[in-house]
Length: 195
Image (tube, rainbow, N blue to C red):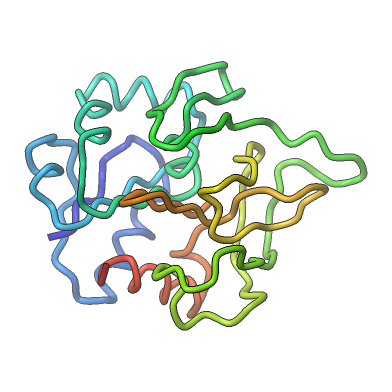
């Protein structure tokens, strides 16, 4: 059973529909016991980092999420929450990945970064990207970004390179919305559920 974490953000329904299209059993939950027993955990997120962390803390979820050994995937803000700290509200995050999330400071480009952009694969052979072509397009909506590091599986360029897909041990993340990124996005979600 896949646990989709009720992180209080909007746009949860599109993640749920993506899992339903795969005919995978799931539960939308904020119950730490259910999350701990799930085979896979998806942490979606839309909104601001500070507000999201307050919601997670009010539901007793940070320690649960930090203790998981099964595959965990953060989506959009959910991916950013996996890092140590965010400039969005100057807030401490879950600390599962070793970097700080910063605000885009790009000249001659609008912020937020919104729309379709390509993924440049940095670590070939990662199971999350199995079956995807180089230069896969994905749909982004974000004003903050995680830098490129050892955890970066794919990066995207928007004024400067940033992490688009991350992985370290059982922790995975997509800065874009795979559930809104067409066939290739659906492949990423399917790959995650088969880890």
